Image 1 (cartoon, one colour):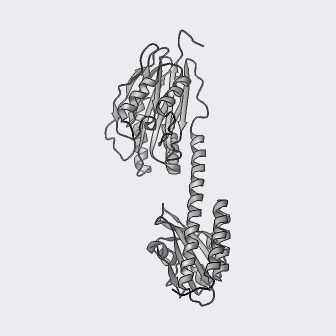
Image 2 (cartoon, helix red, strand yellow):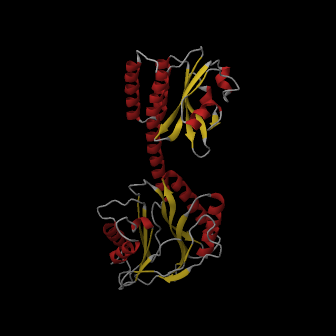
Image 3 (cartoon, one colour):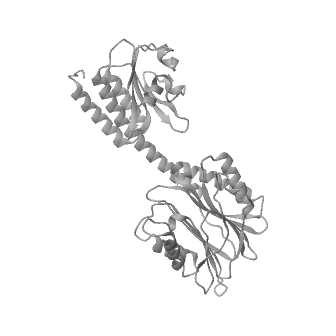
Length: 407
């Protein structure tokens, strides 16, 4: 390796700058600061960061020093093609000593007069984050020490990008989740509602949701759902399924038909997505529910002076992947005066240290009253307690007003 007498000093500058940038967690400023330092420390004329977009498998010009047009013009390059694409595809440093249309895809680089380029991959645990590259307007040789130091810059910058993206995604997902959950449950004569949503500690927020909405003809729609996966993508898919279900609910009084349409939509437009959904349509005057379950766990029903029991209903395949080939089924459940029905997602009852049957038994035994707010508190205390749940939890409780205490 070629010795660099200034390597130790350059490394100190690198550590000081990147430590400050990591603490700040402002990605635009991180990139601007570090690229200016790259130009100064390496005595180059340009530096750029292209971040990896996994959805398209492209590199996207995100920040630059000395050649900002690359960012302004939204330059993109497929992984594996051109100079930066080869760096990303090989996950190894690449030096280009002749910059022209035969070696570089982006015309801005040779039009700018760049003579030599050095690029290194931005990786976190072998996961591609992007590419960091530098360019010089005069011929020069990049030494082994240059490559090593630029890779150190890239490694620390990768961590900053990863932390920022994780933090930003979590915040965006939380905002989206809150916007999609009912801000308040409807006030309907003769009924009371209570709901809980708790994000899992291992996943942040994700694709669990519940929904209650009025329908024409003195009817009420009640939904509980769980999109497989977590994070921003699951929350976005959940939002689309929630909106689609509401639209389909206006077209049919049959919950099975509504879920069939939702399944068709998810299969066609949401490739690779799977969700379990329970959808009920309540006839308000009769307080009778027609319920269809798409891979979802059955609700719990409790009469006024009775023990809570799981409702026996047919269960069809989940939403997505075109798993349902026949018409989806539904069953009828009467909500008795003073009775209660509870809908939930599997994050409430599933744990590594207990079986599904044990979790369901705990849920049934925890429902000892018919006041929705109290039931939510009792259920969460019994099944979550002092150990945070690893998965998201959604819980929705609907009760009929007690005729002995109509309020």
